[in-house]
Image (cartoon, rainbow, N blue to C red; front, side):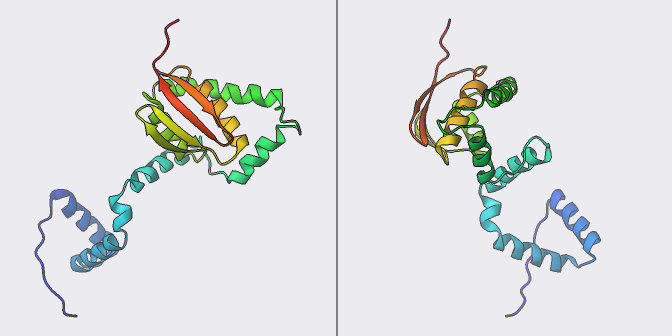
Length: 185
C-alpha cells in the first residue's frame, strides 16, 4: 500500500490540539494525524452516539462522591436484610430511606421538569429501565420485586416537589407510571 498525501484545513482549535499533542509526544504531525484517524475509525460508534453523553453523566455522578458503582447483588442483599420472611420491612430502614427521599425531593425540585427526565436519570443509575408508552406514560421495569418496591417508594417520595403528579400502577417487577398535571388543593 502506498502512502498518499492530503491537504487538510485546520481551524484554530484543531491547530492548538495538534501543536499540544506534538509537543507532548515528540512525534511528527503526520504520524499524529494518522494515529488520530485510525483511532477515530476504530471508535467511530462511540464517538458518534449519545454514549459519550451517558459517560459524561456517569463521570459527573461518580466524581462528585455522592454515588458509587454497586453490584446489583449487594443491593438485593441490603433489601433482603431489611425485610423479614413475611415481607415486613424494618421501620428504621423505612425512616432512613424516606429521609433520603425527602432530601432528593429538595434536590430534584430544581433538576427535573418532567417524569421523562427523572426516569432517564434513575435509569442511568441502573435501578430501572424505561420505555415510553405514549406522551406521558412509561413502562418502568425493575430487576426484581424488592427493587421495584424500593424504587417506587423512592420515586413517589422524591417527586413530591416536582411540577407534576405521578399515577402509578404496579405489577410484579414492572410499573406503569403516568405524568399527570398537579392537582390543586
